[in-house]
Image 1 (cartoon, rainbow, N blue to C red):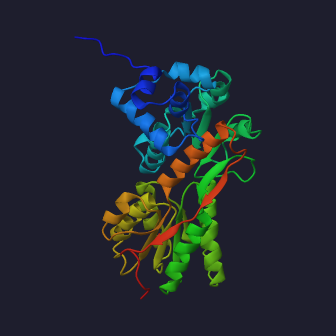
Image 2 (image 1 turned 60 degrees about the horizontal axis):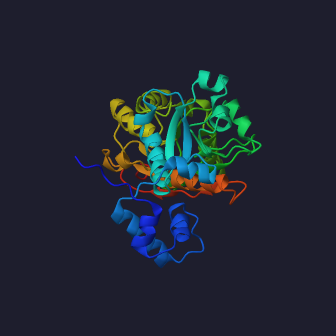
Image 3 (image 1 turned 180 degrees about the vertical axis):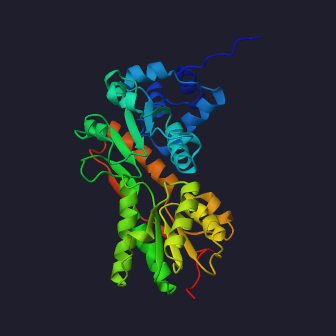
Length: 342
């Protein structure tokens, strides 16, 4: 079999009619001053020739690795989880579009205790780090506070730390869900929240409670339950809440997975949704449109969050910005799982 020819930059220059300098700038994405028509001509020539850039040469030239690390928590089947999957897909898609590779690392106790998150930078393995699924207990993140090592927390924030983040407005998510149900005449609520050490869970709960307080409603501890961010947790929590207070007419959950579990838990308790108990989730995952009944939820743009976090991390790497503190708006998606109180 004949060996495939390896085309070089000079071949692309000849094919496109551009100079070697112009071709080099376009292929290394340093083409801000080059016209769009010229840039497209160079890229089209490179594609026709099947040009494959040398990552080693690019790294030596730019003093960058061309790799980003994503740190995920040590959870069972974390890569199969719909929440993490949405964020990871967005990060991978944007990184690939700008010729970056993604390295996945699980932030288990040994990884943290051996300072592997620092070693990623100090041994020039990566240019930046994206942290997903962090909690208020992740003290190792303090090592990123001086911002000398580019890092961004994805869809969360740590108020006590000076860290970069891109996240959804979960306080507003809680407020929107509670106000919608209040508008339907509900006055007896159950709340299924996620892990209390996760700041966005606290934000969501604060938003719900503020909206209820403004309406003169203050749920007791008997009206709160930890759903563990899982379908099973939501199922068990809904059954327990209705056991504690059979008069509950509406349940709010901190994510859609718990809401999906709650739908089944309510039915298991002999109630109907939404005839007897209304349910509102939070996330807007794809599956929420196909539950029975279809889930009313607060949409949080997870894919957009992942993509923007990746984009801003690269801006930090290239010193185009010196910090990233972004809060994205959320919106209510009304479907069939909530109805006026009877």
